[in-house]
Image (cartoon, rainbow, N blue to C red; front, side, top):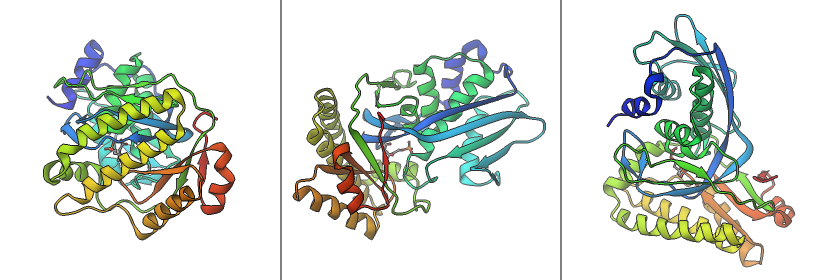
Length: 331
Ligand code: PMV
């Protein structure tokens, strides 16, 4: 099945209809996976091998404005006009093609992202989620959250989780059309929970998560161990969130990220997202923990770390990581 078939299934008679408005704007928060999505069972539809669970970064995310244009598409990112042949523009335009099949429609997309693009900092997740929300307004589709999550997934898997604040779970599903693979908000608050963004590298990652995921699934001798590991981690995280057990949350998220990076490293040829600074930061976290400070990290497809800690550890964290950007997901 192709992405466009899923779009038709969701939009039904609205597929191919003209937009209701000339312009729309939407915001979506970035999200950080505590139990990662790593590996697809369907490349075209971004259907995952495992379910995953994330926390959204409150007001850190992407705001996307989309306008109808007369003759040609235009893309700006953080106020800068982008050439239409960059990876960023092409990904965005191919996604928009799904919604203008058979219509002579051109768009101006103005994306403002709080997260550096392509640095493993969830920029594509919030970017595609904001774009889907803006398209829903522009066309006046009136889609429900589940349908919006499925459409966002077609842009970037992790975007399916960027439609809500707080904790979000993405159900892997098992249907071949992916209609059971969507995210939903988990109704738990944890006001003292903090996430610290340690931006160690803003440069674009050397290999996209799409390529790295594919190579891991195809070549890592350990990939078979990933599904049972992630399933177990997901159960532990849900239990940790329900009982507000920070040690369980932090230790599970950290181990899950390290297991994902171990798989990635065991791909052939190997992929290593970490830089020397990443490893130094990991040792600092472990050192702080050995001294009794409850802090953990997680890492996505890039060299940067995200710290997990409770609010009363903020001062100690700031001393050890002066550059850290602190986010209170429930603040
Ligand atoms: O959605 P993608 O293709 O950018 O992949 C995201 C992969 C990770 O960020 C590493 C994990 C996750 O679940 O967000």
